[in-house]
Image (cartoon, rainbow, N blue to C red; front, top):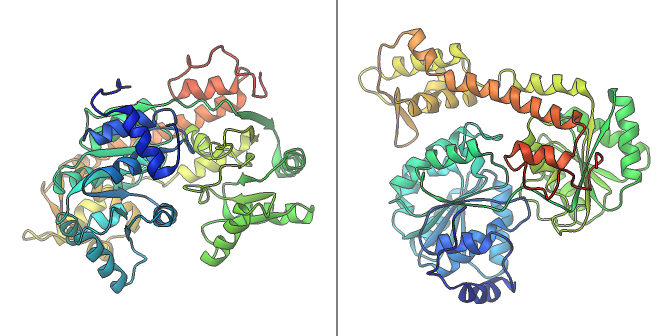
Length: 486
């Protein structure tokens, strides 16, 4: 963690904070992060969900001359932030796949004219050379990467499209980078900084401990007992909260069961029509339900500070995902309850999800040969052209291509095209390049085992979580006093 730089006056920044946002004081870590950005220094910010990460770039963006580019993984997330800024009279351009041609033209005009103070977009849009050409016509004061753990192949929510952001930063003239995440081990932090091309960035880390959250693990065996225990937890817990389940089928069945038991709930998952998802979210935000039963498709960017409980009906895949999800409760600093209904058999479900998540040697070799075939004579085929003749599913093909690019076997060209650099490699040579994904599969298994150890530990739950994140000595004692073990 870096020391506070002396050149930006803290009193002046507090005045700006009050003028723009109406707050009298910064939360922990915010002042240091804002100072780094104001001075044009790269910075990675690790703060828990709900601790005010967005302010760390919004305040300097409003004070610095130029346009701030914010990269976000979720369209719903960028919409919420954009609406919030517009509500304060701040001009925002949003560029994503949902825009009509005329809406996109208007957004690009707002960027070029300098009207837009913020540009919210996705990694996929930044892969478009024409869109980058638009951004090059304005001064970019900050390049913000939200949910930065997505950049890292060791992160719990790795997104291949994030891999190219380091190249995008260079192409845009190397503006200062500000990256944000709520969950990152030291391995992930190091990987993010390397991939974004900012290895010497300041790191502002406020720690993972949330003293207002009570952690409970309730052993269970089979759905019948788990449902009974879930009903009991909801009956004994006040306020509105979230029940996370691992599959769409489980969400629908749980919601149906709870409604039959007289509990006022709504269901939410990614396969529901957008209108029904919006209705469920609106009811949850308005405290019109006791619980929202959801897959992990729900929660990112949800601005509800008074969530009083989060129950995990199934074991999540990683400690990071678990922490991020239960961390959506108690953002108002008031007490909240975080419950895991632990059935050891649920490990099978996560192992099933893990199988086939990453490309294997055959996928990588197939992607290489497809690129070799279509790239005869120096051609640079697009993803769509490669997909047309490759049996590898599109998402895996994209991962394979990005891996080949990162290893120098291929080169990413403008317009989302790929050019083969190393020709005539044999199968073993290509397969060796996929070692990183085999390592990642092994790490995923280790991460799941870490969560099992949390569930089965006989010591303080919070100590177990903090130890995983490398902060085992951050508790005043070995006992937090507010988990079921303490």
